[in-house]
Length: 228
Image (cartoon, rainbow, N blue to C red; front, side, top):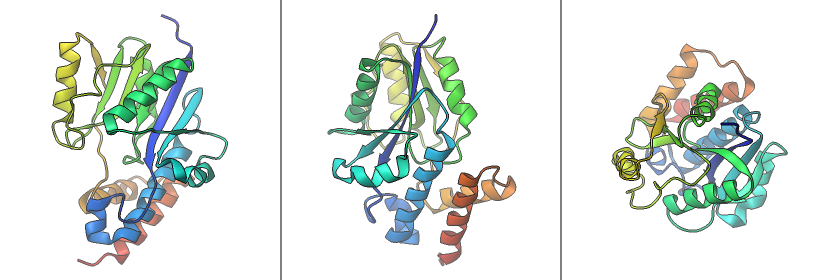
């Protein structure tokens, strides 16, 4: 099968202190957690700005469009996530992508800033064979979802932000008779242990690009400021 346009999307929430990274904020403070989340997003926008023909920053809430535009620059198209729970908003994203001419569509979150770009490229490759691709996260969810040709039946009836997301999604795929390609497991950074793990990852393998260097610097600063 010959495919046309590939689209990569990143889901992001405005970094209002107290509204993002709440588990991390419980230990490092709301302001620091907000700054870390914003740095996560900047890192991902820079590291993935050459993946796929079309790149979409799907943001919320809509009244913060100008703030996201400053980060997106010319490399990303802005798109309001719309209303509803996470499943409804992801369904809206995929529906809009296919309606606007994309053939293979991938979506990632903004909680895995060290995710290798090759992993996302592999997702597009898997979509040459499978109608759906998922990247399992260690917390029981997934860090990436992709589809080819049509919106998959996996966005309703899921207990989002819980450890059962992966299992429920697999059950929905099986019920629909929909085969799924699976990527290597990765991790989200939602709390202090996760932040420390990422810091160690960056320390063990010195960053090869400026976006990761700035991420490492910001994370190190937050950890240095944190005292248990």
